[in-house]
Length: 83
Image 1 (spheres, rainbow, N blue to C red):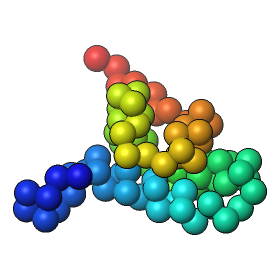
Image 2 (cartoon, one colour):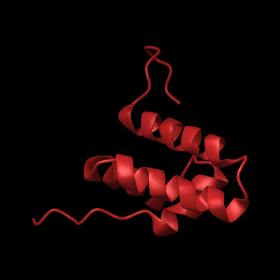
Image 3 (cartoon, rainbow, N blue to C red):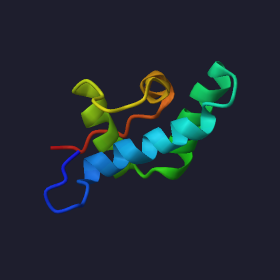
């Protein structure tokens, strides 16, 4: 994470938030945890946040916990903007 001015970038914040969600669900059975992470992100993250999440995920998911990576398969990808 960038610490040049002590603040995280937007993408770093999203990874941090996704990992916090995963940490909460770590205490659940594995499949329930994966579903819980995906369900939370699907319910509470707007399309812009999910778009940025998938940009990072598609680039390798650097910094994302394994539970987040696994949950990505059931997180709704936002529709691409018409160009």
